[in-house]
Length: 168
Image 1 (tube, helix red, strand yellow):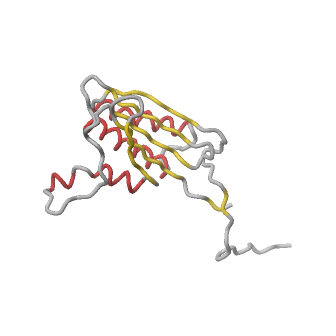
Image 2 (cartoon, one colour):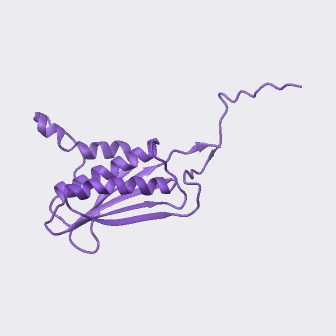
Image 3 (cartoon, rainbow, N blue to C red):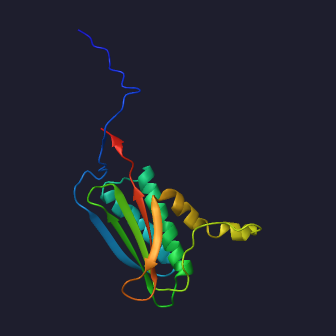
């Protein structure tokens, strides 16, 4: 007896809550880095290792996007948030539903606040190249913003990456 496969094309597929980490627990990684180019290079590498350990494997779109978000936010913290003798703080957090990874980078500089990315008309090529980090972040992240640092001078720039809902 043979059966033919059922063709589900065109039928509505129910969606389930996403849980790419296959767990009902949240994860958090926090670390301070020197506010130097070396610190900005090290932070994404450690974030990549941590994401892989949490079940977001190397080479996946989600892993690559989150690591790029970390790289851009930490590079901005070093370039625009550097205060001599002060570190920047990286925090990665996954929600308990497994749908969202939040990246937070805190620096101690208050006068350089991030602006929504836009290239002004008549900008030189060098001016066009600068500021593209937040353009990348805004395209990769579901949402991003900043808020004043609650425990001292500075700010926290954050971005959230949400995994798409998957069919059941």
